[in-house]
Image (cartoon, rainbow, N blue to C red):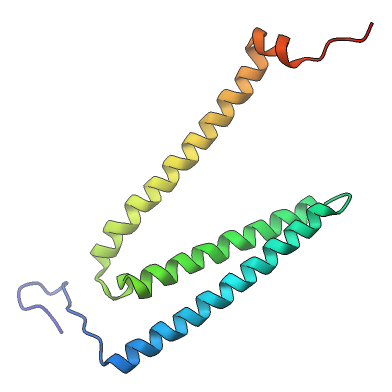
Amino acid sequence: MQHPAFEEVTIHHHTDDATFKKKVKNTTILLSVITVVELIIGLTIYNIHKGEAPNELLVLMFKGMVCILTLAKAYYIVSVFMHLGDEIRNVIMTIVVPLLLFIWFITAFIWDGNSYKNLRNKYDAHYKETSVTPAKH
């Protein structure tokens, strides 16, 4: 249904309660399945680390899969349970763009902190003196 004053603004209404309840039920089942898969991957990573020589590439792949599954869960939660999937594009962008900036902010601070740690370890004489083990006599 179009808003009479603004063509780009649309008003969404749920068709009926049964359709909405079915959508929520299907999303809940999907989120539960994704959570179980994430737990299985986590236990697999744990068991790989218990071994003598863990395969780092395999562990990195599993961690990447967990990140992707977590983002999928976040999308479904925001889209269905927070009703963002029913909103107009401008409202969605008002929420998503600051979120992307926040992710960039976190990444930049992690990068900067790692750079500071590496430079401190390289150029701080006191840190070198306290961290280097003395030679045996």
